[in-house]
Image (cartoon, rainbow, N blue to C red; front, side, top):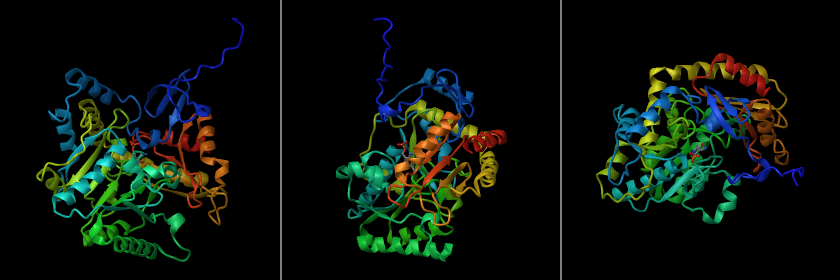
Length: 442
Ligand code: PMP
């Protein structure tokens, strides 16, 4: 019996596919993750743009210990708690007319769900109950829970669950110049065309029925770090204002410093009415997301009927809020947004040098430490690779084999999307580590 080979033991954790059981991570330091067995992996995407301070930052680990010693949990149905109050002070209420209140949840999808319901609640409170329609964009991702999935425009993710998705959402074109701008069409004309399409969608639905337009400020996983063309968000803001609808920005991936400013919308000359953040809020140290609200929405909900129905057991979890508070303090006190700008510029330059003339790199784009390269079968026509090749999965696998974790997106499921590799290293990344990321990716 003893010399019979034993089959490898199947993990009791449900993974996406038994054909791709992932390696087990056991440790980390800075931009490095450590696998069982001791191999070190360069974390070039911070998971999915999550780990903004890298791994095992001593100040965050200490803050978690301190809060665990003091108070681990108090239900928000009964109590607020000190870290939640301090985190809200850190995040909102700093600019006149800006965002004034924060609602803490456990992640990005929950933040989007809450944002959608808060928009709806706002209109109930101000006596416009007919506003129940939401306009979002194709090639967007807002989360995997059913409301957030219905808001998202990722055809492949939506398809299996289509019977469960609300039809309150409709989708317009994304502001994706590489794949959407017409030949001979300049940026201004492209922006005007997108604004006209959004205006037409408001008219089709009846502007008085629209609650909000929902968009990622810089599109993350579905398209690969796509900033909007100049003037796009100002045009969107104007359309929403003219029709009395709200602007919800999803900065779950692009926010909390990732693009070089705390909020990516600061670079667009506008502000949202409601904003969803997560990932970089807690930097991966705890599961936390938040909805940030403008004064008019917060006042209507908080000082209105009191009927907002969106409680969760782990709202404003003290340890999660304590971790996020320390993450945000470290970013501010260590001046890390300057490093995001400097290292982001360096990463872009290195990517351009290394891949700018590559036969299968169609585009290199992004902002701050939120960058992507788009892989194409043909540079001239921008034709994506055949999805059957599963290039994104192969890039991930080959990179991991070379000690690099990078986030591959795409797979040309609808013939529009291309494969891309998303790079989002921690804000503490050094110039030498940027060099290593590009070398290994090459
Ligand atoms: N919105 C965006 C823009 C995201 O990138 C994500 C996660 N990739 C989500 C929402 C959902 O966040 P979570 O995975 O924390 O639920």
